[in-house]
Amino acid sequence: MTTYSDVMAFLTNLGLGDGLDSFPDRIRIQKVVYLLKQFGADLNFGYTWYIRGPYSPSLTRTLFNPTEGDISTERELSSEELKIVNEVRNFLGGDFYSFEGMELIASLVYLIKHGPSKGLSSRAKISRFLNEQKPQYSSIQIDQAWDKIAKSKKWNAFLARLE
Image 1 (cartoon, helix red, strand yellow):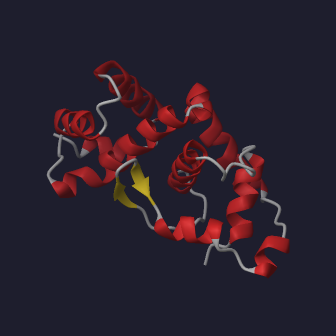
Image 2 (tube, one colour; image 1 turned 120 degrees about the vertical axis):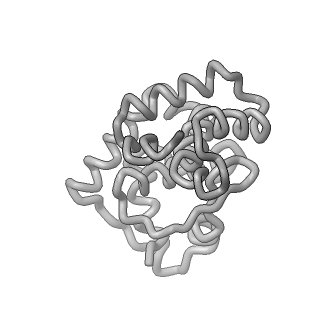
């Protein structure tokens, strides 16, 4: 079971340990934890599609209802976990500082992985779905996010499944 101190160790190393106050901060944390998990962090939260993309109710519960003992427990990340933190930060680049950019990238990764099982079996279908669900993002922004994901080669197996 992933605890509050587990999540906070990752968030603190990313400089996001104090970011639970505003709505954009909470979106950013949901998305960065999703991406940390995609890069191999042992954060056992399930995600589903929601208005702002991948969302984990269990992550929200963990962050907003920690146990007394969990709050007082500090945990250091292992060298492997620190490597994951750096990989995520490097992957995101400038989007790390933008909750909108992080939302778009995490949403696209989620749809690349899970979209085919919901009939979103091609880049065109996923892009169209994203345009409908998130009209605040232009086609150019979506294409840039696709390029970033493809360039990383992290999700090549999932990209290869698309028509």
